[in-house]
Structure formats: structure tokens, C-alpha cells
Image (tube, rainbow, N blue to C red; front, side, top):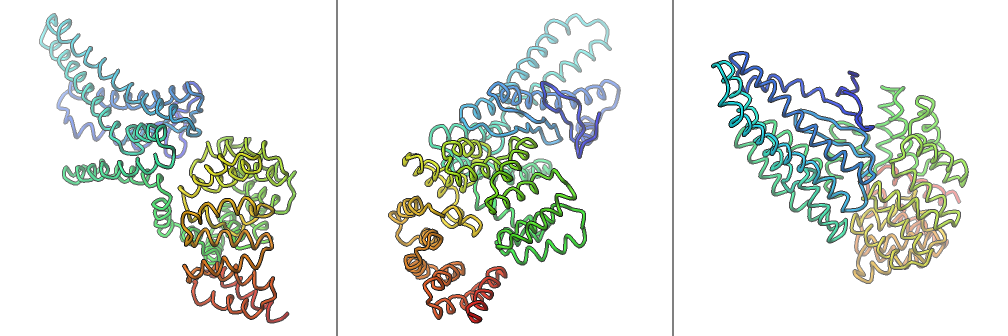
Length: 527
């Protein structure tokens, strides 16, 4: 038995690592508390009950495992722990029917096990118990009969609990797969979220009423999983967790990159051999437009851990920004060989192919990225652009709509780093934003995104007009003043540019935006 992290590996079955979590050590005292064994018979019954319970959980997870393998999905590991089990799929299938099949397999295994326990109970009652000679043997047979009945009840409880329509329980996964089959991915997320929350609240109420703290702890984990169905909920959850445990990550998620850099620098000073802190700061430098500093941090991290996949990805993305496409593709291929089930290298590889005009090849990688990580709006937008360039407007529009449904904020306004998507693609951007603005002409995000696209493609007068319309709706957005000020600079309307840059410091606490505005003001004054 090999200790790995918080669990022990018991071996491999059909290529799957079978692990038992350390929390199972508490199952023995819990069984003692429940059964209160007074003699050898009751002690054996308690131990066999615990062993049977854990075996049923393992078989339940193996049901999911074998179902996943039947539909071609790799399973990395199965973990059994005190509150249940977890089947670690390498990726989620993109076909709802496959997800439905995998989710149903676990409860079906428990139905079969409950049936076998009942058969064993009946066999003992009618074929063994009447012919048991001696009081001691009779008592042992009764013990096993009682145990088989108890384990049948355990399986029924596992069936009922797992079939509750609460994500990520099997019932929630079955509901999500069925809704995706009928109504599409984004609608399935919302329907599953709306159905899961009331049932989760009922479980919490039950846990409070019965003072079942194990159930309450399980409800906390379920709530964390439910939040992944909605990007807004997940963002607030991540903000809360990072505020408590990783303040640098909190500022990063807020988009306050300068303060995040300061926090990561403190973390680096306290843990100079931790590559994650350098890479976190590098990400902030990149998003703040400081590529050279980002590169320096990435290289430091890779000296500490040469095969750090996030470090390699950042290095490849910097190569991509430098138009060194061959070096970027080599790194992305290296990351894919380390982790073939991570979506980002497929997306970045597709981005390189898009820049080269190889749209059909890029589409294959984008489809793979979406299948591995289906809640990233940028993936759908770039795939929409590929479809647009290939003349498939229907698929292009479908991708645009999906991105906006997932997150309007992330899909309508690009990070500065992603503005290169607009370069030489103004026709696609015009098609995209005109469709959004036709539904709602006062959508400030769409106006801002279209203004950015015009500015990147040097249509500065049109950009100023769109920024001004967006500011009439949302006058407290600093990036609108920054974008319009840059457009005014190009139009040589220096006083208007100066006014916009000066406005930024009074409406935002984000230091990197203030710094950008201050630098532009200094350049304006000195020139």
C-alpha cells in the first residue's frame, strides 16, 4: 500500500488507480458507536457491516468507471472516503447520452446489490436457519441474516440518496444530462441549478433537525459543486475562498492586478522556492501589459520546476504574443503530452493556427478544447470566428450566443491581452455586436466591445462614438474612459484625451488602470 497525499493506493483495476482516503480510519469508531458490540458476534457483525458498506461504495464507483470506459472516457482514479466515493474522469463526455449512461450506472449497481442481499437474507431464512443445529450456530446464522437485511437497507439508502436531483449526485447528473439532451448545455446548467438548490436546502434542514454533522459537512461540499453550474456564483465563491486563504488571488479575480502583484511579491519573499507565486505574478504582469516582467517570472518558475504545465503554457503564450509561432506550438505540444486532457493547450494551439489562417485545422483543436472545458466563453467566441471565416454563419452565431449565455461580462468585453482577437477581424466583430445590439441597443458591454474592436482596427472616430454611447449608460466604467482617451490620442484631440485620462483616477481603485492613465498623461504632457 502506497501513501499518496491524503489517500492510499490499493492498486489498479483496468488501468484505474483505486484509492482509499484517510478519513475511512474514522469508520471503525463510528461502527463501534452505532453497534456497541458486547461480544465477538456483535463485533464481527459491526466489522462486516463497515466492510460491506465500503465495498458497496467502491462497487458503485466502479459501475461509473466501467460505464465511462465503455463510452471511451479515460478514468484516472476512484477514491472511496468516509462520505462516499468519487470517480475521477479525465474529462466529461460531450454527448449527453454518454453522461446519462455513466450517471445511471452507479445506482443500477446498488439496485443489483440490494437484490442480492435480499436473496441472501431469504436463503438464510428458509434454507439455512431451519436446519441450524445448536444454539451457537443458530445465533451466528441469525447474525448473518440480520447483517444481510441491514446491508440491503444500506443499498436502498444509497440508491435514494444518490438519485436525489442535486448536482453533483447521480440524480443531479442524470437530470443535467437529460436537460442537456432536450434543451442544450447552458439551459441544462440553469435548470439543474434551480432544481438542486431547494433539495439541498431540505438536506441542510434535515441535517440541522437531526444534528447530523456528517450530513451537514456533505451539504457544504454539494453546495460548492452546485456553484460550478453558474459562473457568477462560482466567481463569488472563489472570491470568498481567496479572500480568506490567498489574498493575491482575490485581487487577481477582482481584476486589480497591481495589488495582486504586490501580494504575490510578499508571498515570493516568504516562499522564494514556490513556482506558483511567480506564475501568479506573471499572469498579473501579462494582464497589466508588462510582458518582459511576466517573462522573467515565468523563467524563474521553470528553473524551479521545469515541467510545470502552467509555467510552460505561459511561456508558450508569450511566444505567441511575440509571433514566434513555431516555438509556441512546440511548447503547447509538450504540455499536451504531459496532460492530454487539459483544454488550454488545445485552445492556444488553435489560436496560433487561426493567426496563420489555418481555420479548419484550428476548428478541430477548438472543438477539443470545448469538449474538455465547456464553460469558457472565449473558447466559443474563437470557435465562432473560425466558423465565420469558413463561411458557416449558423455555427458562428450559435457559438456567439452560447458565449453570451455563459457570461455576458466575459464574452462581450475582452481583457486587454485578448484584444488581438479583433485584429483584422472587424467584420466578424461587427456581425457579433450588431446581433447583440439589435436585441438591446443600450447594452453597454456590447457597445464597449464593439468600440474596442473599432479602436484595434484603427477606426478611431467610430470607436469614440461607441465609447461615448456606452459612457452615457455606464459613466463609472474606467476602461471606457481609457479606451476613448486612446482613440482621442490617435485623432490628435489631446485635450479630450487628457480629460478622459484624468477622470480614471477619480472613479477606480484599480492601480494598474491608474498607472496606465498616469503614464499616458505623462507622455501626453511631455510630447
